[in-house]
Length: 310
Ligand SMILES: Cc1ncc(C[n+]2csc(CCOP(=O)(O)OP(=O)(O)O)c2C)c(N)n1
Ligand SMILES: [Mg+2]
Image (tube, rainbow, N blue to C red):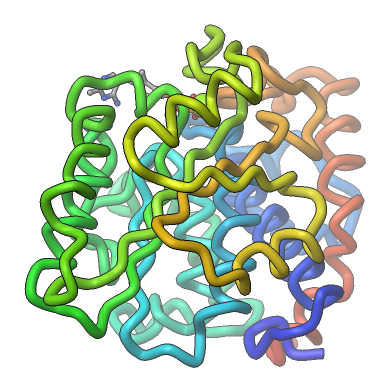
């Protein structure tokens, strides 16, 4: 299987795992990036700075959208929550997009080492999406503009399809919620198609979101009130996700439900930034991190991405 040229359901699931692995490796590791030996304190970065909680959902959205739309040259993905940058970076690395602008990001062991070590590192990559990130038109460090940017990009480009992932906390910003009204103004035939996806993980940082606490009926009624057709997606049901993306729906508004921090040792309100506080000094936390990373089967990743180096 090539993790890059994906199509089937199992390939999508595996791609999500690989991206989750690369996300966690960026957040925590300064060495031993593919766990080729037991994890040690020295392998852990001295300063852990980044966001895990939203990342699995981003990887789920990215892989599913890629499988559905990768043959469409006029497809664009806009990510609202730019604090989920390690997930975006994992996907850009895996697809060779990062390599196009940075020749150190090779699809092999050296490239994995470079990308993981340089995340949130002096003179390396920042912790959030930034102008250095290939293809970025929304940084996401200041939340709220993703949907407006998507509608802006759609102007006069009827050939474009633009999917935009909006955090449920982000949708509480005045800019984001009012941008839902843009559909009324800009859904004419001269403009491209915007596909909003609400990332409903129930939390903004560690607090509950308004939309996460609404009943499904209330949420659907709100979405219909803005003139969209709501479609709820369970992030862990890849087959359903693919089927729903294939449906011909007028003005779809997807609600992607995921568990914040899914796959990690702490979930929900404890998962926002770094879900293990002291893996560099606490043996139990180091073991938890090692177990977490091993779940993604790192021993297969090099072969799956087609790289070597030894
Ligand atoms: C305009 C703005 N206000 C506040 C913040 C601080 N902030 C960073 S992440 C975050 C939570 C956003 O919630 P959500 O979109 O649900 O992302 P998640 O917590 O699920 O990662 C907030 C409030 C910000 N980045 N931008
Ligand atoms: Mg959220």
